[in-house]
Each structure stands twice: as C-alpha cells, then as structure tokens.
Image (cartoon, rainbow, N blue to C red):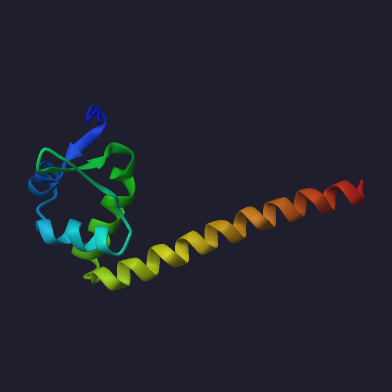
Length: 97
C-alpha cells in the first residue's frame, strides 16, 4: 500500500494533543478508517477535515465519543435530506415550466 496520502496517527496525536485511544474509539464507531502498515497506524489525509471537527467537539465542547457519533450521524442524515430536497425541487421545476 502506498502511504503517500496517509498521515501517521502518532503525528496527529502530537499535533492535536489528544490520546491515541481517541482515534481508536473513533475507528471502533466507524467514524474514521485506520490503516495499519508495518505496525504503524495511518489515517488518510482526506479525513483530516472531519477529524478536526471531531477534535474540536471533544476538546472545546466537551462532547464524548458517543456524542460525536450521534452528531455526525445526524449531520449525514441532514446532508442526505438536503440532497433529496434539491432533487425534488429540480424535478418540480420541470413541471412548473
């Protein structure tokens, strides 16, 4: 596996000042995907934006891991509903014109 686009979790732990267990708990809940190569755990760089949101929730708002899971599941549902609403509006415009 090419690890060019991956960041070692140890680097993230040091940079964001969080425990390694934080990332392991996020992975157990399916919120992040951890890849292991030669006994080193990595996270894809595309996940950083979401991880930063999770860390801010945890550190600044004191939201626990389960709360983060609930928030992100609700945000995904909102996003799906917004996309569905856009599709319905587009279809409705076809009939109005």
